[in-house]
Amino acid sequence: MAYSSISEACGVLGVPASATDDDINKRWRQLARKYHPDLNPNDEGAAKEFKKYREAFEVLNTFRSGSRTVAALEEEFLSEFPDWIKHLPKEKREKIMRELSELESSDKE
Image (cartoon, rainbow, N blue to C red):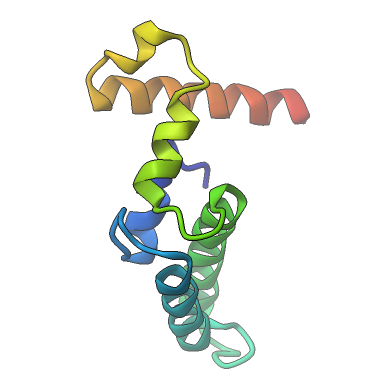
């Protein structure tokens, strides 16, 4: 799944945008232990959940740095876009970012 924002990945993991690296790592470890395929060998649902949480963690892990919060990282991410995008409502920004992500994915195939 491609996440349209860092906040969306935070929501999947169930951590607030103010979460620190330690908060995110702790939550990831909890979810990984609960849904890991090796611990749930005959549960396909657990494997899907594990994959969803792993992808969200990887997104956050890519963008995090030091003790900066997810909200600060998302602001930095948005700073790379033209000014007119920053002034759009959040839903429209997320739609644009989702569409760009889909285009990037299709270019790689």
